[in-house]
Amino acid sequence: MKLRIPFLGTVLLALAGCGSDSDMALGELPAAGRGPGMATVLRIPAQGGIPQLYRLPGLDSSSWKSEDKLPPVERAVGADAELGLVFLLDRKRNVLALDLETRRIRSQLEQVRYATVGPDGVLYTVDTGSTVTQLVRRAPVRFRSKLQGKPAELHGTMAGTLVARLEGKSPALETLGSDQPPESVPIPDGPLVTSLWGDLVAVAADSAVVLYETQGKHERRSLPVAGRARAVLFSPSGHRLYVARDRESLLVLDRFSGDELQEIELPGPASGLRGDAYGQWILVRPVAGDSAWVVDVGAGRYTGTVQVEWDEELPAVVPPGGLLTRRGDDIVALDLAAEGFPERGRVEKGAKDTWLPLAWHPSQDQEAIALTDTAALAADSLGPAASVYLQVSSSQNPAWAEELSQKLRTAGLPASVLKPRRSDEAYRVVLGPYATREQAEETGRRIGMPSFVVTGQDAPSR
Image 1 (tube, rainbow, N blue to C red):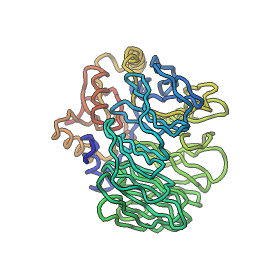
Image 2 (cartoon, one colour):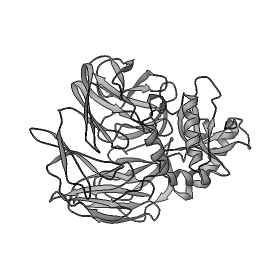
Image 3 (tube, helix red, strand yellow):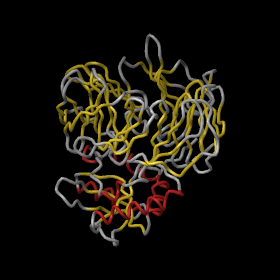
Image 4 (tube, rainbow, N blue to C red):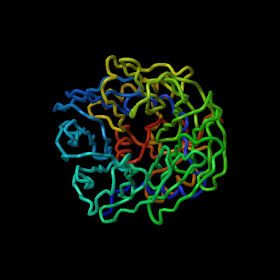
């Protein structure tokens, strides 16, 4: 069965094999692109109740309100941004679907032991009998084959397959699809991570990073690492690998050649890594202490330390350039782009609940968003003639930005390049211009890829 693959995702996936110059990093956004409405975060009450929505970056309360109450929730599984669905696992092992548009909650699947959401928003569940079910556009599809062991981790892929790390004395990586029998390969011990699309798996295996393909021949490669590899992270395009080690630096490797591209100095040895979908920021977890080291990928340097509380969901990098974390009993939002990481918002007594960042906001917030953006534009002296664009990527390489823009135009999208105003800014690939923010955001939902609404002061080059 074929799954939906948004066009833009297909283009970027194809470009991922073209060479390391196509690795993307998000450039600095103008002030107008950093207002509320760029993204939201859903607060899910742990003991049950009404879920609440907050706008980023300031954690302002949204006018959105659920029509139904949630039962006590075990965890948030993930979201399908295109369909506006949030999947939750309750304490009775049922998967619930919160429809953000209708604001209603319904039971989706029962007797679920494990669940995950793939990069395209497709839900995968494993029930108490090890049967795998895939939810494609609200329709359940049961896999012909069962999972062959107890999974320590589950990951969905853009190809519609499920990737599981199986527990046991001999850990294994198993891949299966709705009509594809299970295929297993042994893997070493060590933290595991998948690429953005799920087509690659990397394991930090002490003296090496071991790579596996989840499709095709399931080939394995080993990239030697000097110093003990404690964690690994893919760049969004999959070209680069970031490796945390027992040394005081973050190692950057070329995934294709295995060559060392850079070492970014850190205050000490690291044990974990978290990034964002745009590849702009990396949060590095120290071996000891409740803090995170912030790495600006575009600048290639460590920019500071921030107090956080690490768990499965937080801290998280949230657009535009923010950090969401627990602090004591509260939830706070910080600005990673500003010196000292100042606080931009706080929700008191929110730490006990689950917080899920979303690339979605309700239509009833549009008026408030428009007013806020108008004020931001006036403050920046951009004037009323500034145009609205949808930014889909940015790069320091102007040739690659033009190449991507041309490919998008060939496919019928109004793509162009916004040139940087300063030498340290990136070339931004955008769609537009659009007459209104609503039109741009509708395009963003339709293409199904991470994107920002930005205001361009300069005319795009073509």
